[in-house]
Length: 125
Image (cartoon, rainbow, N blue to C red; front, side, top):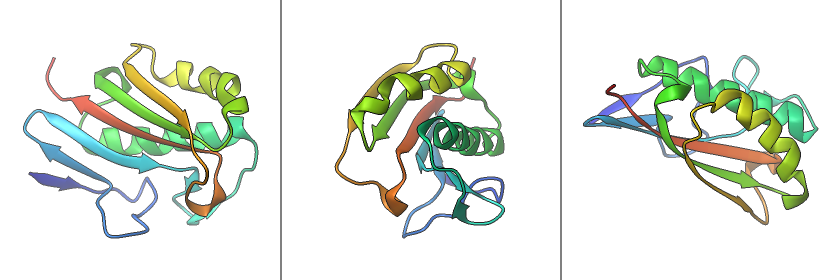
């Protein structure tokens, strides 16, 4: 196993890695809409938060030498299921290969953000 880390995505805010490479798979921790340059959540609406979360996911994928097209599974967490449609609009721009997905509403997310996205990617073609 190999840990993946990049300063282009937010640093872990707990005892975990941004991602772990295990065999042919990358397991990325959930990404919330923190600006990696400032360490702060700088946007408030679901569309902007989803965009920042997706950019953070992309930075981790890139650090592992892969991209959105190699993601086989996502798990998405929403603070409010009413944001589902707006979240999907952003999500669809990044995950054009339509990986398997779970999307659930949860009571609370870290830093009171509106969304979190984690991915599993397959590193071979």
